[in-house]
Every structure is written in C-alpha cells, then in structure tokens.
Amino acid sequence: MRILAFEGTAHTLGVSIIEEGKILANEKDSYTTQQPQGMLPRDVAEHHASLIKELTLKALEKSRMLIRDIDVIAYSAGPGLGAPLQIIRSFVYVFAKRNSLSLYPIHHSFAHLIIANYTANVNDALYVYVSGGNTQLIVLKDNLYPVVYGETEDIALGNALDKLARELGFGFPGGKYIEEYAKKATKFLEMPYTVKGMDLSYSGLLTYAIKLKGKEKVEDICYGFQEHAFAMLMEVAERALAYTQKSQVVLTGGVALNQRLQDMLKDMAEDRGIEYKRVENQYLGDNAAMIGMAAWHLYKQNIEPIKADDAFSKPRWRIEKHLEW
Image (cartoon, rainbow, N blue to C red):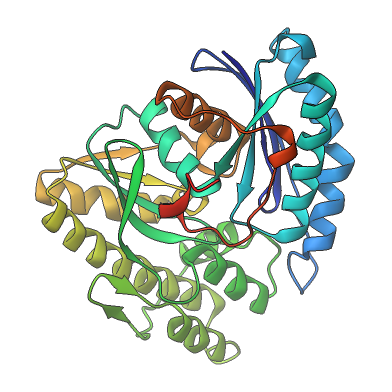
C-alpha cells in the first residue's frame, strides 16, 4: 500500500509518501508572518495553493515514485481553518479523479495520536495533545476510538501562546518566542489558575497576562504565563492518569516542542512511575507523515476509503467522530 498524504489544516502545508507503514518522504513548508494580526486564513490558503504542486513533486522525487505508483490518497479533512482546508480538498479531489484513486479523509487530531504509536512505540498511553487549536487528554479505545478525558473549555494552549506573543510584539508562530523570553525571567508573577475538574480554561490567564504589558518585564510575563498554563495541564493530566491507569503518557502536537513543557510532564510521569513518551520533533508540528500514517492505520483496521466525489472538509470536527464520513 502506497499512500500520498496531504496536510493543510493551518499554517503548515505538508506532503508525504508512506509505503507499507514506512515514511519515505515528508515535505513541508510553513506560513509565517511578522504582521500584528497574525495568521489570516486567506493568506494561508494562498500559501498552500502556491506550493502544493511543488511539494507533491518533491515528495514523489524523494521517494523515487511516479503518480501511477500511488494506491490511495490521504488528506487532512479537518478540523482547521476553512480556506486552507478547501485548498487541500479541492486539490486532492482533482488529483484523485484524474488518477482514479480513492481517499482517506483524516482527522488532524487523530493523526497526531497515531504518529506517536508508530514512531514512539506507544501502546498503552494517555495522550497529552497540545496544538494551536487543541488542548486535550485522550485515550484510544481499541486503538481506534478516541475518548476525551479532559480539555480546554475555551482557547487552546497554542492559540493562547500565539495571542500573547502577538500582543507582546512577536511574530507568528509565537510559542517559540514566549519560550525563549521565559528563560530570561528574573521574577515569578502570580496569575489566574483555572482548573475545573478534568477541564481547564486559559482565557482568564491570557487576559491577565496581556494586561501586564508595560507594567512588568516581557520576560517575566512570558515566564509567569508558561508556568501557570503548563501547571494547569499537569494537574489535569495527572488526574487523568490516576483515573485511566495507563502505563504511559505521551506528549504530542506542535506545542510539545516546548522544552519546559516536556520537562514538566516527564517529571510528573516519573513521580508516578509512568513511562514518559514524546514524539520526535519532526513529527510534533503539523506534517503530512502523520496524515499518511493515520491512513495506513485505518487501512490496517479494515476501514475502507471513500470515493473522490465524496471528498469533504470539516473546519469543526470532534475527534470522537473522526470515522463519521
């Protein structure tokens, strides 16, 4: 089984080729901006449209394959930004029709979990999934059906980091700037801490941190925000581990690139005698390899692809419903 996979839910466009569960190519290009308004969907869509053919050819060349060698196409059908998702859907529809190929519409968040299974030897884990649009604690039932044990009630961690970065005058994506400035802090600032059972809320923390601009050092604001945001996540993750009795905890998603977050989860896991796992950096941020591996996983689970004419995109798509095509 040879899979040509596409990712394009947000700022990163990716094209990957998977052969029998092995990643042969994983090309990507990310939209960045220094503009104060951050990421505009129309600009991201234009970025994807301008590069998708080029990245597809690069992936085919790197894997030493021709179009006729491909058996099926996988693509990120959601959740994500509407305009970029439409670019991906339109491209794979035409590509599939012209080459008589079927499609695997992949849920972006599900793909972030599955890539952990195949690249980090995960088999009995609580997934701590943190990205621009999602902050969730998930367990996979029968390795196919996600169960969400906790999540943010408002803004996701990655989005909160980006918004704070924008208010502080940094570029997009903003998480890396927050992390670097936090390392230079000289004072710990008390900020709101909102955990409600198994869920958490970042909007109050974000608003408070933004109001400190001009009153406190930028470095201290970044440090205080990070420490509170990550500590909230650790609390609900520890509670989820106690409830699920999982033997592993894995950190996945673009925000998982943050070293401080990695260290905090690792320390918490070790204190509980839980095996800590982390996805390789190249597969943490959005990428097409995870889309292709998710399609490979569904294929191995005897899930049939759809026809090109049934291609769809869902900007709002709950992970529990990832098989509702």
